[in-house]
Length: 451
Image 1: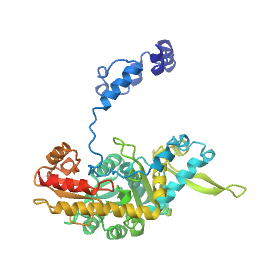
Image 2: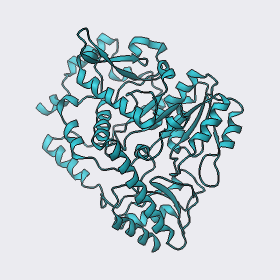
Image 3: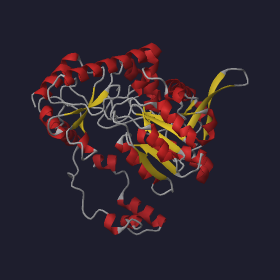
């Protein structure tokens, strides 16, 4: 009986009393507004109630069914990257005072939380080469959608132009966000080397647009010519939005803000946030000072009290529904505090030189992998542009079948591009980071050569 009270603390009489107070007779009446065809018709296919001991045994058995390959033999990228997390990161974020993703609604009493957010914003600005950063984005794809909405508030032309080199899932998220608010989404093409075509961008922008969107490095790993695309956007009166899914690349590449980007967004998971069965992730958004009032989320600022002591405050909360209601810039409702702190500690631990060394390490290992695979007979490389730590290799046969066969040998060889593009059945997106030792890269090349 004690187990029942742990999970269902209310009695039948108490639930009935609550229903009467709300004006309903049955719990089902609470869901009357949901169309009948969308409601669950029968019971969920789950086991019945269990004692705690039995429940733990059942979950342990289910967890044991997960197949974990050799942790070094993974060559997956495509927006989620495996990097080493220094032990100090996990040690510090495990302190109990950090176990909340929210900035309190009376934030100034939590100076430690605000300082951590302020430091995160500062580091993101340094990484992107822009003036402002917030700390309130869920993940990279929705951050990009928020950036386009922001660009449209700045230049309301109700049209966004996306590179076809953008991550397909990011593009899909953008279309979902904009589907019912009157912002048209169109795409422009690429050059034979796999990078976005500035001339095609100019043609697409000729009809007017509030935002030109590119990914750098792009979904196929290629390093984009950001300055040429920034010039095209400026000429058309559009804002250049640069999405970065691999933040470690910014340790080697020139910051997008220094290349003409107006807004830089992306995924900060690669900055010390481990891959944990799909989450959590951490979006970021940085922009120029002139765009401050149009940014979603919260901005933490530094101030001084009456005695001249340094303190931290919520400078802007343009998203807050409880303050601005229908005038709020977005419905972003959390500052991802714990993940932002993780990224901050990671970047502070490595420092400027460490970030540069990590980026060089990633690029060098990927270059070595590309060289080893180039020596395998029958392979080709459809995107020959310079790349960072991932690239596309065209196999002799089906990439999906190759991945399946190599998984049986303990190697996660990459992402078959047929997952996103029906006409790219033989193409495999391979990512190499500092986590891949030379022996595993050699083994990948050898095993692909035997296919």
